[in-house]
Image (cartoon, rainbow, N blue to C red):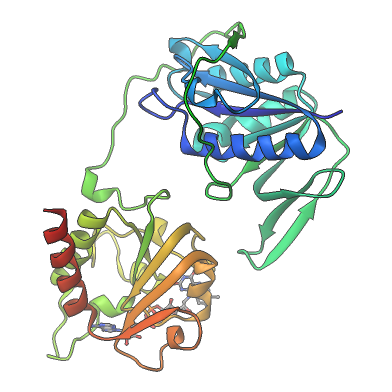
Length: 340
Ligand SMILES: Cc1cc2nc3c(=O)[nH]c(=O)nc-3n(C[C@H](O)[C@H](O)[C@H](O)COP(=O)(O)OP(=O)(O)OC[C@H]3O[C@@H](n4cnc5c(N)ncnc54)[C@H](O)[C@@H]3O)c2cc1C
């Protein structure tokens, strides 16, 4: 019989399990029910926020203490290894958070196991068939393995986050002997709020294309105004900012066109493939290599001046043939008024 362990961790404030962790709990619960397997949840945190797991129907283990408040390879790897051994896990599910992605392969190696990453679904009738995408989300692969323990890192947004009435949970403490700590986490240095434009958990992806920096009907370029409009919209919506390759390629250290954009924002064949329920593309033509990045965007809308742009050829649900400078100014104004 398989023994399923879901590895989870607290989010930064330490008071709740991370959203990715709760998504992994859903995946683990479904898999355990389907396989008739034992189901354990392991928590790594300063103080395990286990209350939310009251109705998960799982045995709950925790490695707790100040050393586990923050991500650090040595302490996290030791904690995850101890949880896997305590649960005698044959299948280990974990969120693809930076915290888990950093240690999972090392922990799998310590236990003589194997690992697959970027898993998007778990299927199969008797065994486990894990699905992931290859070649920039164009080909889907299905993986099954006999080797155990088998670690599977689940991509964010592929399962609903587990929720249920909070209650008393019996948490079994797992002791960990920490190796000598050579890394001390002394704090965070974060960019200002406005500069944090990549927000994987946002409901909306807002994509800016090269049109924002092209000559406009008055014959002039309005890059500064474009920057104000884009940041203004992000401020009122909390949307995540994506960009076409053409737009980010225009910037350089000496000549920043829209200084808050970097190649990290690029969406597409040579960029990222984010997951968001909705997407709005502005001043972008909707070329195929770019639209590859929209593979997992639920509802797609676009604003372009060009009635023959790629979006109008079946790639968007709604296309506004309109001036994005005018539309975004008005939309932001209306949203700001609604927010009060
Ligand atoms: C191998 C390969 C890989 C590639 N990988 C990627 C990738 O990963 N990501 C990526 O993005 N691209 C990629 N590209 C490039 C991609 O094909 C496109 O060239 C690029 O994305 C186009 O960018 P754009 O739509 O922003 O700009 P443009 O093609 O210049 O389009 C600008 C659009 O803005 C509109 N516009 C202008 N002013 C306004 C206004 N005021 N209001 C509304 N609309 C306006 C115009 O009508 C036009 O449609 C790749 C290309 C190749 C060959």
